[in-house]
Structure formats: C-alpha cells, structure tokens
Length: 204
Image (cartoon, rainbow, N blue to C red):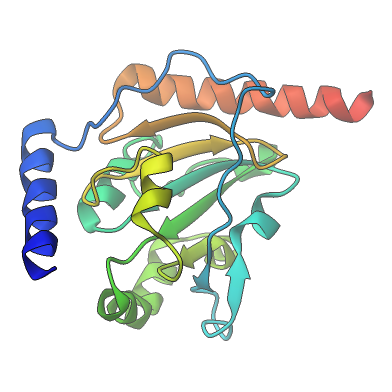
C-alpha cells in the first residue's frame, strides 16, 4: 500500500511537470442542458467566521444561481483558478451583482492537510475581499474519493479546475490549468449565456 501511494504521488508530480497542469483543453462551447451531468454534492466546512465547525453542502449554495466553481488542493491549483479572472487574484473583481456567484472548494489531500488549511482560515478570509464569499469557500476532504475525482476528470491533484454550473446544479463547462485567453473569454461569455438561459426559463 505504501509503495502504491508513493507511486501515485510521483506520478502526479511527473505528470504536472510535463503538462504544466493542462490536463485537458476546455471545450469551445458549453454543454447542452439535457446532456450535462450534475455537480457532485461536496460536504465540508466553510471559512465563515464563527461557523468554521459547521458542515454545509455545496448543493445548497449552488441551487438557483449560475456559479463559477473553483476546485484546488494546492497553491499551484489556486493560481490556475485565479487565472480565469480578470484581476488574476482570487476573482475579487468578478461582478457577482449581475447574478452569478463564485464558489471555492479546497480539497485537502488528507486530514492533516485539512487541519492546516483550517488554521489558515483568517488568511483565506483576508484574501476574499467580499465577506459574502466566506460562506462559499468550502474545505471538503471527507468522502472525496479517487473515483469521484476521476468522474470530474480531476486527475492531477496539483492542477486547479474550474466548472461552470447552472441554476440546476448541472456542469455546463469545465477547464483546468492556467487559462488561455480563449478559455478566459469563453468562461465569461458562457456565464452571460447561462444567465440569459435562466432568465428565459423563469419567464416560461
């Protein structure tokens, strides 16, 4: 078992070195709603002050809104997800007043790493200038399996992943690694498209 774990660790390192974390190229169009898969329901603690010990489910946060979901386990992955935003730093200039939200999911490798991340809750809160986002920054380790990650094509733990999720919690677009100019533009074009789609469905 120890040898298998070590092998897995080295494979991720070598793979990350060779690909720079670009495990796949994001599609040039978003997925049709009837073909899209649901975003898994991650359960974890947020960094919201005074509620750090409470467990919450991501589905409860995602329902009813277009969401840009960022998932990372290491700083390298966080840097990747930041590259999809205009300011390049934690998405603080993203205008959520237009009807979408940013949801962060930190996936620690193990319980010890999870404790370290939770110890840095103050630092994380300081980096998220909008305090409303504190309740949408999840630290979720429990129940996250390799099989679950594989289903989301999250095959390298050092890579950061970005998912565009609609109001019904369906994944409509996905990307990973550092954003290309085309991928960054596509993300925000598709955010606007899903907002229009949601508005149209409410009128029906």
